[in-house]
Image (cartoon, rainbow, N blue to C red; front, side):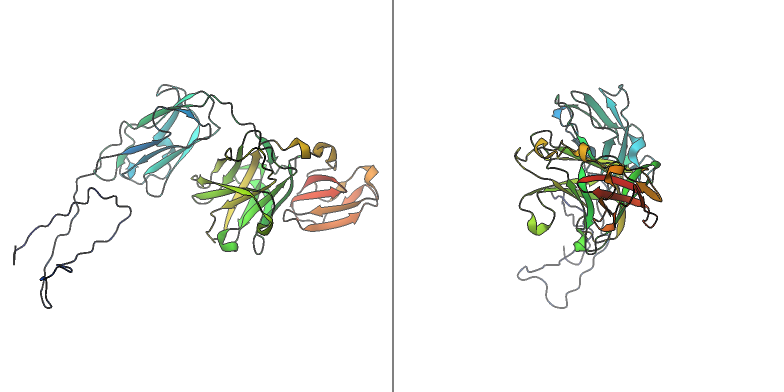
Length: 404
């Protein structure tokens, strides 16, 4: 129609559009015989259909799934943003969803939940690993949420799955930051300069000690925490590692196993990523490396958080666990544990009398020697050392020391 108002309709229903925020209009474009210089067009009332697209919901695990891994993600994802029933933004969805044993009438399973920045994916984080050969039910409760497009109530969103009959993986504690006899010989940080890390009280539980990592801005955001195990982990046993993390933002953790510390010395490695969805709350992450050969010999572990993001932030790490270590390199670790007291200490550290005359070295958690001395008697003055976690070594005997 020429010189008349015409309504044009463009149907993109077959197109998947994510976060589009522009409209571009061409008149005639490159059509031969079309517009000429000086032609004038008028347009008005650009609008989008108010007919909501069909709601689609995706469950992980899929509904009625069987043989689900005990560390499997549990999530509900919609193709349409979800809001609270009153139309407000969802910030903490924990009270909006449920996780139960068996079915909707089963016992509640303790969990926390988070929603992604798009308001479309709710992830449920059980407080403990799932149980073997068990059916779980999860759902969005009735009458608590609505869809942003169309405003209809979120209803009938339920699913269930059954876990594998395999037993839970056997994991031992590598490092719990409590000063106990653990299975790491080195815990330090890597960066340029190396970022600081110190053992501090848990922000949520002052009776528990955790590692505070002040990630810096070097390495292009790939600064890391490095652990060297007392021996390579036994890859012929269960292949699941876990670590607790408390992050100030939603991001991800990369967990790396390798056969050396420095990049130039590494000849074999394995990396696994996991999402951190809880903000300023403790979340346990699991890393499954069962695809590795049973013959691998990795004794170096690396933790990256928000890799590639060179923003200075503070994270908390605790309870690093994994498979048992190889027996061939166990080194009778318990027999080599150095006995010192008190621990924690503040001013004076006492050693077994049979060690008088030996050389003692104390290292901080960056691996830097902060004190060396010859034991003239059983007492060593440590008043000049700052509060934190240290490694004390006399010959081949070692122990972790907390100075408070």
